[in-house]
Structures are given as structure tokens and as C-alpha cells.
Length: 209
Image (cartoon, rainbow, N blue to C red; front, side, top):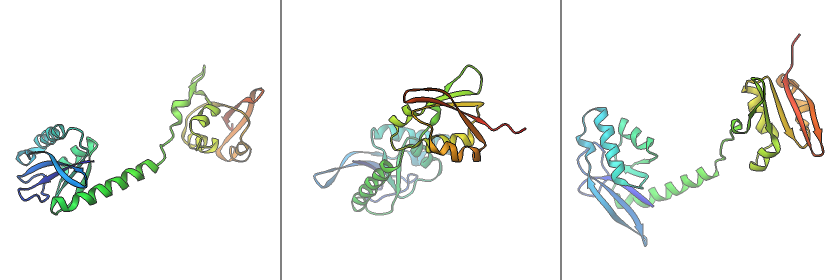
């Protein structure tokens, strides 16, 4: 893991807007070694545009590093780092005293991110019909690619927010919750096509007379 640190002459973290250096550290055999160290030019920048450009130049010099530690990274400088995908740690201490804890915190954060489920997007599975607002989706295809989901988790958020005239759901069987929940959501359904282990169930809004 590589970590960039904004530091002063005494190897203590400092503000990005104070004269000093930006060093890249990497752990090697239990010890942190300096891979690269260059002058911090961001502190000379005047105005938002110059700060943004100076940070962008710094990011280029850092190469594949995506973690930056400093005593302070305010405003537009912080935003520019974040837009480039950096994780920012604000710590005031001797550099060699904080690298292990930053690494530990970063590994924990990575582990948490991996646990977070990827948000499901139904739009990539919807196919348009002949008429505007006529849509269809293959439920079996979605479930095979997203085994952690259920038809209810897939459809209800879309039924609550989606705009369509009718939605044809291709499935192996009619989900039980269609019977109990669709009416309460303002929809009704009918089977429009059926063959061995495959049917098309059409969902439409209940027409109020």
C-alpha cells in the first residue's frame, strides 16, 4: 500500500497550504520507506483555479497513489483530491507514527466497501415494446445474474417509481406476492402467454372508472 503524505522538514504532517513536501511511502518488510518526495507547490497557488491546477499536477506526480495524509486539506484542494478518487486522512503527528494506523483504517474501509451490495439497476434489463410505455423484462435472466435478489426486491421499487403503460414479466411462475401486494400498489396482472416452465405476466395500472 502506498500513502502520500504532506509533510514539513521535520517529517511531521502539515497543511497542503504550507511550504513543505509531498512524500510517497510504501511498507517494505514491516518498515515504511520513501519512494518519492517532491516540493509542495500547492501552497504557492493563488485563487481557486490555481489551487485546482496545482493539486491536479500533484496528483499526476503521485502516479498510482490514491491515499493522501495531511495536517489540513481544506476546500477546493480537498474536493480536487476526492474527485480523483483519493481517500483523505487529516492527522497532525509525526509521519512514521501515523502510517500504520492509516494503513489499518484504510484496509478496514476497503473491507467494508466490499461488503456493501452493489445497487441493482433494473433499467439495464428493461426492453421496449412496440408502443411507447410498453416494457418487458426477463425475471429468470435477472435472478440468474443476481442470485441474492428476489422478484419482489427487483420489481417493487420500480413499480413505485417507474413510468410505464404495461410491464410484461417473463418468469417460470407467477410470484405469490403478485396476488397479495400488486393490488395495494395500484396494479393488476394477467397471464398473457404460457408454455412449459415459462409464462409472461402483464402488469398494468388499475383503471379507476
